[in-house]
Image (cartoon, rainbow, N blue to C red; front, side, top):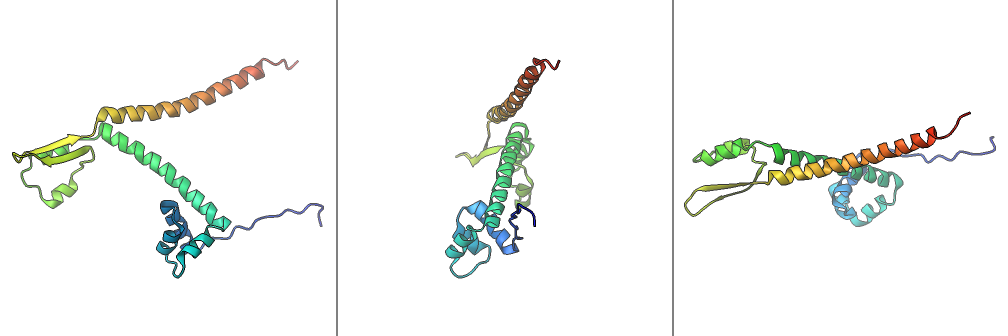
Length: 169
């Protein structure tokens, strides 16, 4: 035997229902509802609370929460891009179509539209989201990303200067 022992935590593989629980909990934040939606029966509050005491479950919840955060920020950026640069042609088509069918309405991309209403005269009014605000938000996000890169480059530069200032002789 060696003088020092290595202790390893054996990670158990999650069962499909446990993985479902983790996904529901990451989205809902409610252990009882997550357990019920994952298919557990009986005292779902107790079952959900017990699941959250397991390290493997907590790690999977953390992993899924991190994925959701990344996905949400990407979806927001894509949404701002669509608002800033999206086409209004379907909204114009709607404006000039007298009685659009349900299928025609479903096929229209009205993402840039914030409000549709008929006025007293029966005319259709369409309002759009503010493209300039969407561009400003995209620009602010880009500045934040660039600030992080600039800070990293500045730190690397300082490190290089400090290393270059020393004599190796």
